[in-house]
Image (cartoon, rainbow, N blue to C red; front, side, top):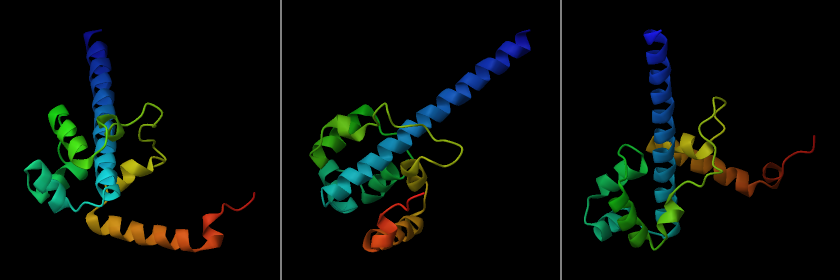
Length: 135
């Protein structure tokens, strides 16, 4: 019986770790979005925080957890409330069908993000593509 309990405990830990990673990825996406809304470059935000632009990239790409203290500093530097950088409860976790766009975008390379932005601009400029087709 002990083996079954251990497997269940390990499965619960994997699920908890996945949920934790989802939250970290969503925070990273929200930090980047807030920076862009503020019209700040990575270098300018880094200057405000006293870190390198590379460190801002690390945060925005979700390659490092953003601790509470850093989150508070980021919010102040971006002139937003800390809560604006946190995922709301209604945001779903990653689904197997890939339906969580912010998480997928967070996992793209910089080149992938540039390409996705170009595609999005095409959709925004084409009236036929902006409106969903009636079924």
